[in-house]
Image 1 (cartoon, rainbow, N blue to C red):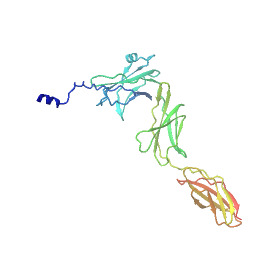
Image 2 (cartoon, one colour):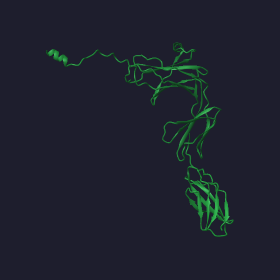
Image 3 (cartoon, helix red, strand yellow):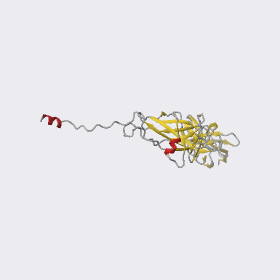
Image 4 (cartoon, rainbow, N blue to C red):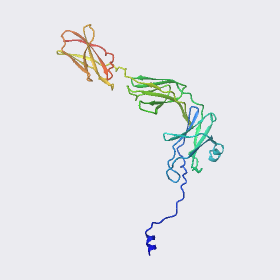
Length: 318
């Protein structure tokens, strides 16, 4: 009886589980590109084993690269592929670099497999084909200059396509701005009063070619707004009782701060008589009957830059 109660009070203990194999999951995100005279291979280290358990580490990585057989057969490729390159992990990505010298002019296939501590693996990663080309020449003489619409970056290089990178004041890594053909690029998102650093690389991408030159050294610029707005257009003057009413077309520039109005009597010099905000009109009063008045208007932006004066209008006060 006591034995039966003891048995009833105990939980059932099943068969012991087999030991975890700790084999890293097969990689599926390997990328291969050419940068200058280097072949760069990258992947994200897996977090789980083939058992679905958390990995303490992703194990030893084996990188193999070799000519691409036609048609592609993994065993044929593996038999002639070279195992080379050591991976390092930085910022959550593993990468290895190989010289292109042995492969220029060839299509090669690269793949990676990860081993457990006991030398087991889940197979090769995705196979990536790369057509290796002679290293691209880096752009030269990179310049950055402030323009009214942002920052213009220019460089010298053979004809081709180029990527422009920018690093802001609080950024550790450069961010890709865009790609262009030719030798210049406009960054319309740059703001006056902030420091930026730009670099450029030549790129080539067609078929299995994925090549970039070494990126240039960064050029630094602190763009300042020294660009005056456009002068007001369509200035008109109408005489009224005791005043002259001025009007002109609204300036649509986004950093407009206002306008300045200038007046001259007869052949005299212009003098500023009004500084107003945004409204494209002005009432000059009082005026003296029989006197010939000349008027001109300028635009002023938020940085204090003043445009040229508009065309002059004149009339005699009644």
